[in-house]
Amino acid sequence: MLIQLITSGIALGSIYALIALALVLIFKGAQLLNLAQGELVTIAAYFSLAILTQVQIPYLLVILPALVLAGIFALLVERIVIRPLIGSEEWPILLATWGVSITIRGMIGLIWGHEPRPLPSPFTSSHLRLGPYALSAQEVVIILTSLLMLTFFYLFFTRTKSGLAMQVVADNATGASLCGISVSRINALTWMTSGMVAAVAGITISPIFFLHVDMGFELLLSAFSAAVLGGFGSIIGAIVGGYLLGIIQTVSGGYMPAAIKSSVPFVILILVLIFRPTGIFGKAIVEKK
Amino acid sequence: MLKIHELSVYYGHIQALFKVNIEVAEKSIVVLLGANGAGKSTVLRTISGLLKPRNGQIQFRDQAIHRLSPHQIVRMGIAQAPEGRELFPNLTVRDNLLAGQYTQRNPVAKKESWERVMDWFPVLGERMNQQAGTLSGGEQQMLSISRALLSSPILLLLDEPSLGLSPILVSQIFKAIVRMNKEKGLTILLAEQNVVRALSITHRGYVLELGKVTLEGDSRTLKENKSILRSYLGTA
Image (cartoon, rainbow over all chains, first blue to last red; front, side, top):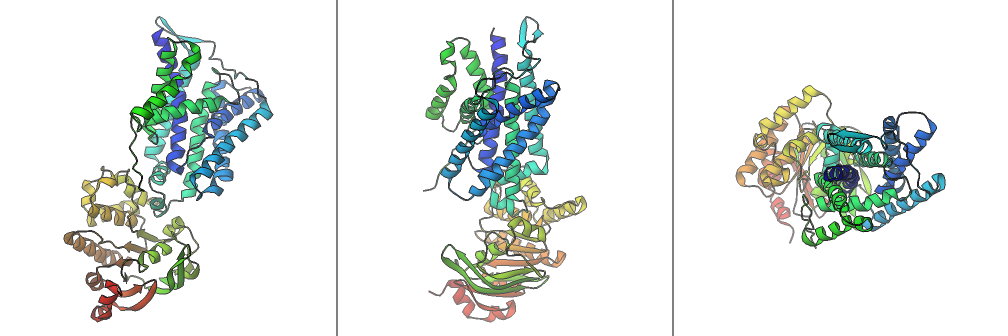
């Protein structure tokens, strides 16, 4: 029982880790909190649903085209909504991302309806036997895909020129422009990457949770708690916080009534904010007055 | 090589530069002198595209550059070690230097410029894996200059390279400036408050006072001029 719970926890944690990572990428790179991050998860799930109902391809193959579409979609959001606002204060930008969130949810409702829809995956009904344990195959798919993605992005960040440019812009945009780096181009790349990271979460979780317009928003709330737990603004913190929160939520959920299970992330959020506001890996920011 | 013509720059409603004219000849070292707030940094920031002029032009090798973005100006061959250094404090010294090479494609040239920088500022080699924010002031200054050099500029802008450094480090940095110019034919425009030292290594100088050029000429001639000291100390 406990082993299965922990596996499910790691699977859910992978999803949180990906979304928290996507959130932190934009937070660091473009200095803004993207409240539409959850909708980038949702839209990717619906993209894969649309692709799967149009063409007969295996579930795992849908990840690639859905990722590309999600990346382009995130890029468009940056170009159309965020870029014209660059240079204005934090609040208008924050509200604009909230507007994007509401708009996308409305659009999805118009196109695909408000009823929950299943995303067919051959892995939902099968199990992997590991000695006495039966693990859900879809959960194993989630864990492996997420690990693959995290490794890929780690290598991208640390080994490529564009990855370095993204880190540099996040650390000091003026300094980056003095190195010949186009900050607006890197910002666009950051949005695209963040959209794709979120998309992996949406595509892999949908076969377990049904697709619905609010799925991304609900996941965002938990992922936000995960990022705070890890230390908001820290990339490694987002990932560790994501896995921790997923495991804590699932394991404790196994021993408590289902009705209060979903409150666990918020209880953790409140506890972290009271006792360790910098999170696990975060640094205190001293604001000059 | 660089011609600044009737340049006027504003911060909001406040005018910081008044019809400034400056010329920098190829392979020369030119110094901008003046007290704090005289407009030295404003000139350098405008050349790099971090500020946009309201009036006037900046021409680099007969091309107007005053409407280009900072990253385009770096690609044309103008690099700057700016005021405040603008390093990447949370990244390692190595990553800071690699960022300086961002525009460079030729692997042979990249290796060469890397080795040259290590030769000029050997202390950076010992600090490669340290976070830039943890370096001493002098090391940060060397890192900032090195990062600028790694984009293989034709024109190097240095904003008060000796600011806040110990006398030994100041000599080291001034020596490096002379070597860059002699060994690589690099053209250098620097802002300095260290008047006597700056005039002894440069070819030409401009004195700025409250956003206007009040004096210009050969560094040797300027060195004899008594009013330099007055403008350096401010008019008060």
